[in-house]
Structures are given as C-alpha cells and as structure tokens.
Length: 365
Image 1: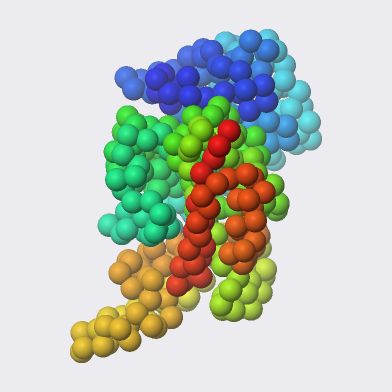
Image 2: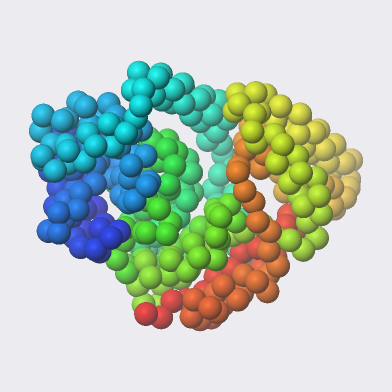
C-alpha cells in the first residue's frame, strides 16, 4: 500500500483512524508493517496489502501467514507477538500444518498462474457488467471501490478509466494477485477485508460488486453492510445471477457444481477444458455464420456473449462456475427489494440477455 492511501482506511471494529509502523518499504509501497489504532487494535500489512480481518478470520490469517509473524517477531509489539503465539500454540502438529500450508500455497499459485490471464476484452467485459448505467466517463475523477475484486482486473480498469482513487477489496488470498496486477498504478489500493466488516468510512462516489454477492452464505446481509461506505449521493451497483430464464444454470450447472467442486483444483481445471471447448466451438460456429451473412443468427446462439473473448476467459469462467462453494440466483424484483430495504434511492435495474442482473441505486446518509 502507498502511504497516501492510509487516511482512506479505518478500523473495521472501531472505525478509528490508523497509525502505521513500517517494517519494509520500497520507493512507492509499504511492503510490510503494522496498522494500529488508539484503542490498541492492530492489523498487519503483508506483501503490500493491509490485512484488515477480525474474529475467526483473523485467527486464520495469523496461522496462514506464519512466516511473516515468525520473521518479524523480534520487532512486533509484545501484545501482537503474544496473540500470534497463542494462535500458533493451538496447532497440534506444527510441522504437518506447515507442510499442508505449503501445498495449499502451491495449489493457489497453480490456480492463478494457469487459469486467469489478462486479455484485451477485460475493459469491454467490465463496462458490460456496469451497463447500461455507468460508462468510463462516469468514473473519471471519482473514488471507487471494487467489492470482491478477485484478481483485481476490474479494479485496474476502473483506475485506467481515470478515477481519482480505486480500491479493491477481497476476503481471499486472490488479493495477492490483485496487488501485483495493480501495484504500478498510483491510483489503486488493494486490501484484504470481510464484506460484513468493511474497513472504510463513508467516502466512495461509486462502489460496485460484480459476481460476488450471489456466492455469499447470506447475500442480502452482505449487501446491507455495503451502502455505508458511500458518501452522501454515492452510487451502489451490483451484478448477480438471474433466476429468470436461466434453466441451464439451475438444472445443469448447479447439480454438476455440487459434485465437481470437491475435486482437487488442478484436476477440476483440466476437466473445465471440456465445457470451455464446447463454448469455444459454438462461438467458432457463430463466427462462421456471421461470415456467410447471418450475424443476427450468431447473436442468438447459446453463449453468444463469449463470442469475442479468448478461450482462456471461457476456461476461467467455467472454473469459476464449478469451483465455487455456493451460488444463488435471483429475480430482479428480489434485488430491487434489497435496494429498497437498504433505503437506496433512484433504483434502476437491467436484465442482461446472458442471465445476469445489474442494479444501481443512490445512497443518502
């Protein structure tokens, strides 16, 4: 993280401002350090990313980043060192834990190194999800938040659209990928945070969550925690799965996912070549139809949305559908109720042809 981004963060528990102790810093970023509050709350900066987690998630963090705390233990405040040691002491077999941790890290690296790759259509994809309500010009000079940023691809494209500052937040270790993807952009900051306990005060002009809320165990509760990050007059936008006219997902993808998601990720990735190849084949057939004078017919084929995207993106989406633990599908009326219940105003919805819903509303504090 950059020092200039520190004032934008706040303690997810007390909402107090942070002070920072730096362990390692390069020209532009604090790579390692500690964020603290006047109440004595603390959060580490690991690999350039503020890790603003609480409760059980915090315990997991202390274990997962064993090497960070072990390395900096001599310079950690006593309270921090004791808390970390208490959590580590709960591990019955530390050697076995560290071996498992190494394998998990290798699996994660495999997933992001082999599955997701940047491509020339990500910008188009980003604004497709925001459409028809937001265009690139609407982001210029704004402060934005990408909630559930994953690899950081949409955080990056928001920043490249001329935002004043673009934050990306995610609960998982994908923040490491997002940080690497955006670290050279001075108007971006990636944080690890829980959607139910956001580490921001009311400041954002636009906050968006694309393809994330429908994977939560309690999606509407997650959504309700988001509008307070907006400043008065700020806009909240989400994209979720549509239930209407989406039988293919409900009655084929979902039963398949409930079985395949338990497979090891490298094996599941290989199996995803099958649906990826099917979609790619249909797209190639559509391209041929368009070349012989039937462009409208091409658009009516299944998976026409993917017709301009590279094969790797189809493979990535197949993996995303089949690997996620949970998916929920909604009618547009339900999503409108979410926005109404959160007291958002000027609510607008759009049902995309490929079975997604974009909804936007304005926040009045």
